[in-house]
Length: 465
Image 1: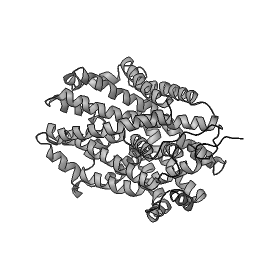
Image 2: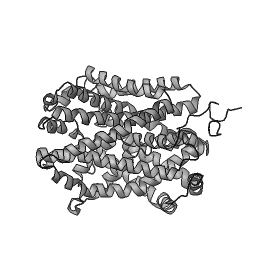
Image 3: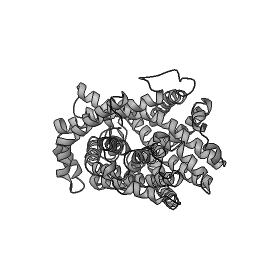
Image 4: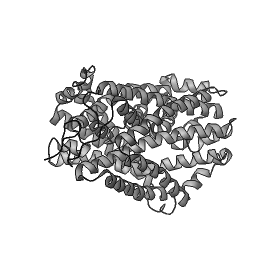
């Protein structure tokens, strides 16, 4: 006979299931998951490239509708079943579709966190160099490419970052994930505000503020919509198994809808602050040069160090900026690894320590392959991509839309929209229920299909994003 969990639900292993201490612990943990490199690194370069204010407007509209519906869905399913993704799907059936839907949600974070830790290691390296006073060195054209192709150095910083994530995870939900989130998230907000204020007060920076915040229809294109949709998907941790897992730790009295709104607000505020940190600084440095604005993923590791090198107190600014990015990367990596650990605990009944060690091994093996893909393993090309880029394409462009489509199928065809509403209404009124029903019934599958098709088409060069 299984032993009931803290919420009265039996667990697979017969052990008491961990839980957050309350709403604030949950909100900060989910916000920590959402507020990561997707906000601090990805959002500013996409906003800069795809129209500034019009990109921001479309992103906000999608997040408050489509994003909201998917967050509610995954969180409610997690709390309803008290399981991570595989167990949540298996609660409704044991056939192939339920196996596929659960495991595709569960495997995504296991594939993302290794290369995410590689990028986290890059951030840690840059922070270390700024602390040493190396702003001028970091601004050199070849510094970033030399570093990532160095092999041993990139591997060392991967291990440093991964070790920090592992130590938090092995401490548990309350003592590890929740405690770190409660410390790091407020500090992250304070740092983001400080750095943003410094950035927007540089000479010439106000043009960058206007570019980011004021919508200009001349900058609109269909790819602005598609890219904003993909960014919303990535930024809110949708279809990564994270929301199922964190939802399973959520107590029944916590208001899911209100918590979701708070996560949306927190995530959006940090994304806008990230834009205000980077885009006005680029305008101040380059006068809004299109080539500089459209630098893409290299904006944070190549362009921004050049900006810092031309600023007074460039080292201090670099320390604050990369400390903030490091905190954001850590909180997201923690949530990704926690999802894998929770899945192994649920499915195999192993101890948390054993599951954490297995995830650490996966991170080191796949992370090392991604890190060395720019040096000793650079001869390996997968669909014309480096190992890291391939994992990013596989998870973000193919697996995440499929995982979200599986969730839509589970809710609309099996569990039922009314079951989700009932779960939400256990703790509060479901104020946006009509909006939720409309999006899940009619629009979510269409939007997800657009993301899937456009992302694959872009990867194979059929369209340009």
